[in-house]
Length: 172
Image 1 (cartoon, helix red, strand yellow):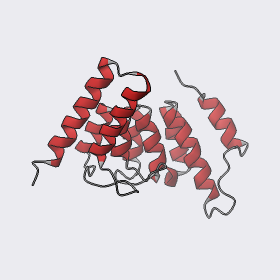
Image 2: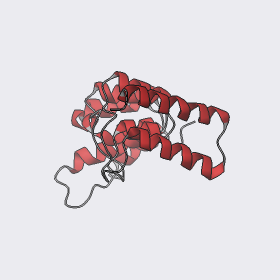
Image 3: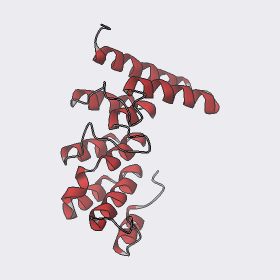
């Protein structure tokens, strides 16, 4: 169930509630990207389509794609990719790629889709420390530490790790 309604996101955008940084060279685009992030996170595919139609360049940002993947929304993830979201772009707080975000979130369906679409599993995060496999391992360990890991989450992380290891090919 969405936490923020599509109507609330529309209203917030219309009333200037999404405030980019004061010195932003593209404040309108940034406001649309913020609204897209909320729409992606809260599973509003029709609103995502509306926002991209109104400001197509906003669909080219990596942040809404990361939000959709972290929230396990495959329809929105695919929609954003189809509208130019960079599959190997960097975002988040650590310069992670969408593949890293999906792997850390335990989202096996998203990881498979990204790999099938050509995501590069060998890229390192913005800190130069972890690739997507490292993010999956970190996400699984964090998930387990926070409150134990249910069997379905354990299976998802195991599947992700297996996919990423197979995608990387044999060790040199």
